Image 1 (cartoon, rainbow, N blue to C red):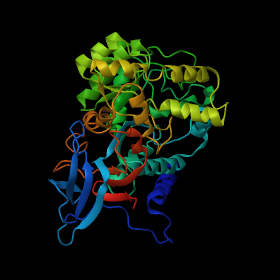
Image 2: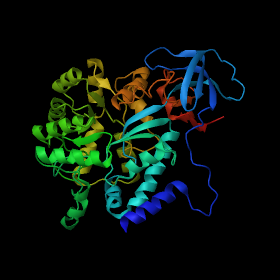
Image 3: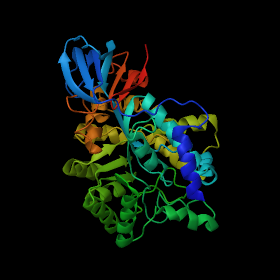
Image 4: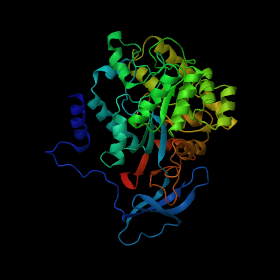
Length: 443
């Protein structure tokens, strides 16, 4: 009955009620459709100088050519005039949680009271906000219910509107670790909560947990080697996974061609994950010299997720009781230490990929992260590279997105100002094209 209800309501999410006239679903553009985009300034390959007055020819959802000058559109083609705008590749957020914008006590209550179909509606809503903000690709790192796996597929089929999603399924930690859903919940509910497969203990069990998520369709594996700021338990932010467990997870994921993203705050958990072969460190709040050395040696990416502090500050301003007990204490610590690891990582040459932890921060305001990255040691161009070229590489999508080049998918955005002078203009998108379809065009 639960599965039947979910399938029925999922159809309503994307199709709407049968008695109401609905617009056609956003299917991929016709193979022969041609769009010519005039760009006043074009940052086609972030990391290189921008071009003035260039034209992008898009056909069938892909970039066919990039030409100097504002070339006339051929007969039958659509012309989009962005000659007074700054044009760049669609942005990529490497760390989001689409299923919720709620956290603290409110979020904990929602986890056990909101139905799975309702969470599916919320995920679709957050995905649309994210796309409108110019983020045409995201990596969703953790959703127990599986609704984002379904949303990923619905968007790729043209049944729903949102960014391309790379999804981890359910995140994995040890029992009492950051991803243990039973923390802070009465014992009689534990059996039901643990069905998601989010916990493992011992190397063999951790291999099973990885295979379980891959069987569900996970594109990437997300694990926690340390405690978390939002963990409802007073065990700190140090390592909470043993080396053989972490190594078993990474080896199994890599066996199946899946990368591993690691939630890690404490220096010991960061080093443990890197020695096990992690592909990215998320948060990395207490990155030390050994962690930096290993990141350079292994070429793992650092995803700072500085925007979490914006979410914490805003929620506490609106409701001083939004977080309680140990969680509130850890939040105060996180606010004070934010950005220190990035300030050390940038001059050391650590590879940085853009990620916000949206869901802890607010969906649709992902570009706030750019301001924090620049505040804590990056120049605007490097921050944009982190959200395009580097993020595409981390997600395994460098052949498809991250730059505006012939043969790549037409994920293109534009703003009214110059983000290389003021990175804050990326918070106000004028134009968003995803997979060759225009989703936003502000005249």
